[in-house]
Image (cartoon, rainbow, N blue to C red; front, side, top):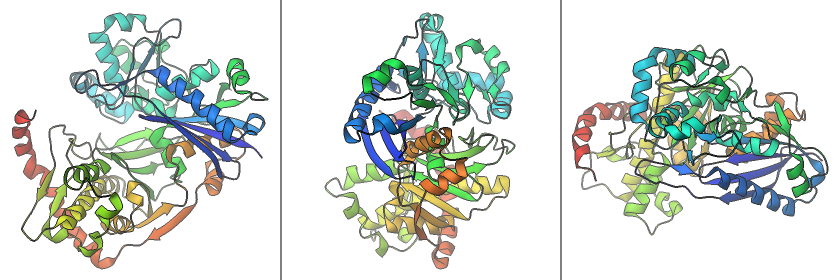
Length: 499
């Protein structure tokens, strides 16, 4: 029996997932590591902590599954996007990694768009936002020139881990797409962007397809962990791209709704020709010559967590949601906008804040909870609307993953708001499973993504829209869509009073 290992390098932990070639998960281990915030708006991590976590995860996986030493046929990765790692001429890390959720680079984003705005959109299919890698590079150039002078290689998190394992520099197209340095259509580093911002292409790693072999586990690590043969290592992909693969988003007509701290609505794109003009992200997929579009709600599950911590800290989430079925769609005239930390899609606005609108004395906690769930779902529907309007696309089904897939009443809200059948996964392992699938394809256990998905991806519940609820939500959603313009000016005025 052959095994494949998917390693998911996340923001707070590293997870290792071992699957048999029949798609069955046989072992799983995770290891946490710290996040540093040296100043307000800063978010950094020590890359060495990722390596330590990997050593611990591999050791524990082998303890759980001793025959992994002889039957492992491939390793691949998923990783947090955008984060910047700088290496010197000795391949040593120069400074802590600046992470995707670091927001120190507003000034650099403005400079990028003022200098090359149209070119950035045309080539990368995205506009400059604080999360992307290019603004972080400019910040280093301007604020830490001594570190920029030392830099001999720029890397992304999962690719630094791959370098540690193999000794080879690499990235893949799905992760390179999040740097704001990739010509998405031509699938090469964008020379004009590099030249404008004085970044030598020699600083960037070569780009591979996600299933390409980038090397083998180096002899020292092979001996350390006792593997009996060479272990092929495959390029892997960005976390959202791997999550999409792990949910079977490999053709048009299927969307993915992912609700964690933030929320994502994602759809397969057959080419980079769709012009979203920066309203949505458009990135290269883990599938060769394929893409995906994506909208982001910054505070999806975070809105529910905030409400629970603030108003119902003694309740469990199941207790919090147990009565929402008693509340009709529209929460008895109560509306929530989930802009509690600003917003990304469709309103790129760091100063907007959330609202409860329509509060009256009839409202109880269950009405507020239902309004929160509806508001989160409305926010994610905004991305669906942009996709349908821009492409003429319609969705046959939506795969719901994450926290939003754990409650049947919330799943019904999703089906009714999106007016689309919503499906859950029988085994939801997120980006790590997508990484394992890339290893399985790379190791030629499967001929392509379609045959791999048929084995690995198994759907569970199907929730169909209820026509009466769909009609009600169509009306409530139109009211929701007005709230941003009605409240933005007030929120911007209030910004100066925030501590």
